[in-house]
Amino acid sequence: MYYLCEVLKHENDSIEGKRIAVSGYGNVAWGIMKKAAELGAKVTYMAGPDGYVHDADGINTDEKLNFILDMRAKDPMHCKPYAEKFGCEFVEGTKHWGHKDVDILMPAAMQNDVNLEWAKKIAESGVKYYIEVANMPTTNDALEFLRGQKHMVVAPSKAVNAGGVGVSALEMSQNSERLVWTAEEVDAQLKKMMVTIHSMSAEAAEEYGLGYDLVAGANIAGFKKVAEAMMQQGQF
Image (cartoon, rainbow, N blue to C red):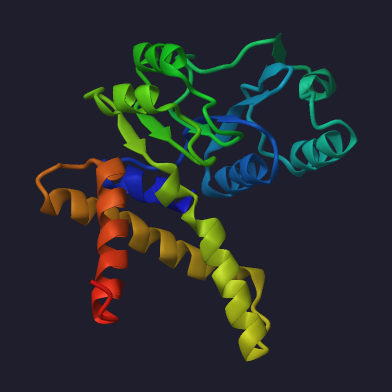
């Protein structure tokens, strides 16, 4: 979510009031729901193996978030119980990509979730922000298609979900130094990481004349970091 906030800031936009569609309701998607609510946005679409839920009011209360935890613990393959519990729309056997009443799409469930057919529907919907969260949730041809849409900003999973690895590093630091950090301290460090990752990606793309291409920028920034480390160690 912090990477998304930096993307919005670059576009002179804000997270406040944004409607978000996610796929999945596991730890990653659930975290998006929780943090979105804290930041003033709301997740209005959630998809699972059995179909998708549309909650126009947003999945943004403790009651709803806690229900999802309980629901997936009992039966991780069905999100329909959420719609039944809170009286909202459930559409069986399909995905929600392509709806026009959202501002941000965040595939957060599995690899190759969005193929070229879905990518075309996404582009036609007019949505501006496509933020990958799961590992490689977009097929190669779909990703290239979305990157070619002039009205869209596409952020790659290798940058957006780097916070997971980053927090693991923070955990190792605490263990090795025998420290105990509060959740707020860890969150502040995570935000700092994601701001830096976005900045490095954007600057790398700009340096090589690619504009605000975050996919290319993340690839270049990552390659340069590894290459520079190898050169410093004499491995070239």
